[in-house]
Length: 280
Image 1 (cartoon, rainbow, N blue to C red):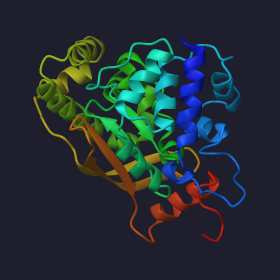
Image 2: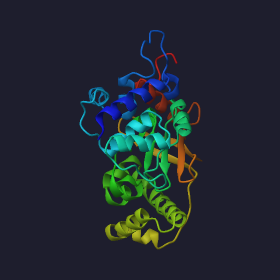
Image 3: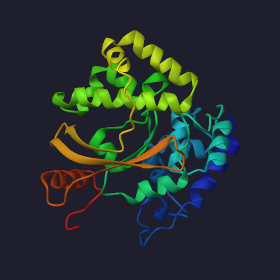
Image 4: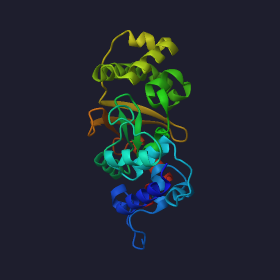
């Protein structure tokens, strides 16, 4: 870990960003060039104190997950992201595959959907980025490692993963997840992560085996999803998928019919999170 170079790189990239680049209002009394440290920390999902220590050459080595979060927060291009990993003492992830970086253009779109839940996922169902309303709706989904990065793994191995959907919908989602994994496996050929994922699921879940043997193949691009929120109850939303810069990534956008109960629930959620203010 090169603390001096890491601190300099973080500061320069932070100062190069405009608030509008990440969906923040500029404000009439802003004196800081670029983003404030606390704004980067908020975008990265870490404490302001820890991020500040990194810029002051006093922080401990950030984990790979933290580096990925900082790269997203600073809207780094792939080469810049790889450089950040090296400065932090880690090997840069592969450009393709479940750990691939989200492009800056897609992140800008994500920022501008401030009143609409949106996430970027890999073709294996790994959540690569979420906007604030998506975190409020779905919970934080970007901090997993290993096989757990793939939602299909958590679905068949971790019962808590299913709590996000009503029990009556579990059969439908299980089929969709396995059919999507079939499509991704064919697209990726002999990808070692995919082979390990399928082998581990086969050993861990008879339900997965039964669905895998049906050999259904499909990429779901439009679906109606009922999300179980712990405070607001079931929220029924349309989920539309769009291909991002990489064919292995999709931008998922959750919308509600105007005037519907779901639209009111999303508005309530956005106000609770401070994304919308009263009167807007």
